Length: 156
Image 1: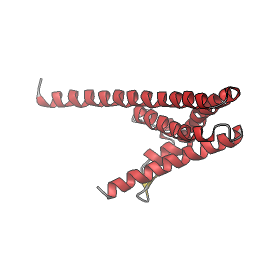
Image 2: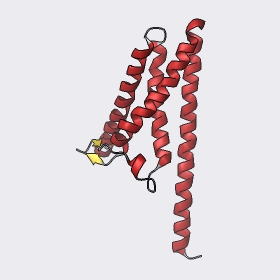
Image 3: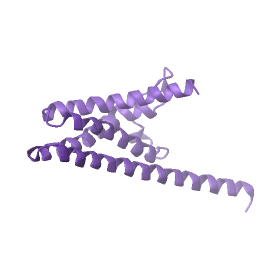
Image 4: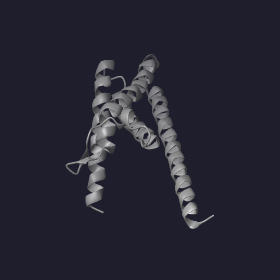
């Protein structure tokens, strides 16, 4: 086997291993969401446990919708003004070159971000108010992540 072929095989294998590693990390972060739900359920009164679990489920559902519609384009899109991504729907249009492992990894972090604060809001907010908060924090998380990533480029 010549050197060019070895390099090509090694590049393909390392790309697949990296993708699998990303998905393992995403699964672990997703289980953090379940852990937060259990902790919050343990800290609240028994009558509110169902409400807490539903809020944690809605964190992921709302976070997913916001991340697909707003967040992924701003976070992973081509740079616009040097610090924010250009919104786009590559998920729906560019299947062949789309990086699904990176998408799932960032999606899970976006959805889990809202869950971290939900314990402090347990038994204090109405369900609709909490759903609005979840959508806003999911959008803000992706914007702030992109800005921080851009700052790292300018300040090595």
